[in-house]
Image 1 (cartoon, rainbow, N blue to C red):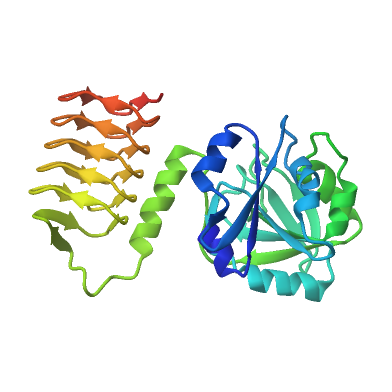
Image 2 (image 1 turned 60 degrees about the vertical axis):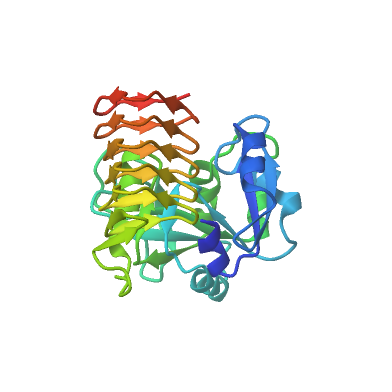
Length: 311
């Protein structure tokens, strides 16, 4: 997300954090992908609007600012969205995206000029409206004044309806890719589909060798990743930075987080393995499994399909 924001001209990132905020500060630090990072810590959850009010003292004075949910992946063009916001002289602009089934998301109805007329947040009932809330907004500083201080407040249910009634909310229609990765299944789907969308690399044939290991495309290997002799990685394998894959190991259709060690002759398929996990040699991690929490899986372990092993 930091690279996405940076590419859109953003130079400061304010993270609204609560649970595990101290650990996040250590992991992310004060600068990432060219962005200066600051933290606004909620002592108690403040909903979707309260954190914006809490972070008001960290925001620039007088200029519109971007707000984005932390669980989306997209290529929304922030520069063009901001330009339209300023041209429309709106108080708030919301990014919308079309989906086949809008019922799990917030459905939004606009007029012919793109002014938002109705906002329905995550209805369980099917809706005829196909444009949904993409979780990205441009807001004027004046919007902060409408958010009560120190209380849980919902953007969708309390702040946006007032703007809509006054005709002060504009829609930005996004026609690129967009994923809500708030669940493991959608996180996996997003990673795999984006991997498949990558432009073929003319220098990377369908199967390549690295230190005697075989990499089947499409796959992604982060910096510092090491592939052992006779190992097979891919297709649809995503290995983050500094992952170690042992000799004759097999990793396919899986996402492996940074600094994880996979032992010799281990087989991992259709699974997600978190950061700094150690998987002993000769283990079998079956389809649909999730392992996280910097755990160590003993040698020759058999992890059944759809297992969840967390610290």
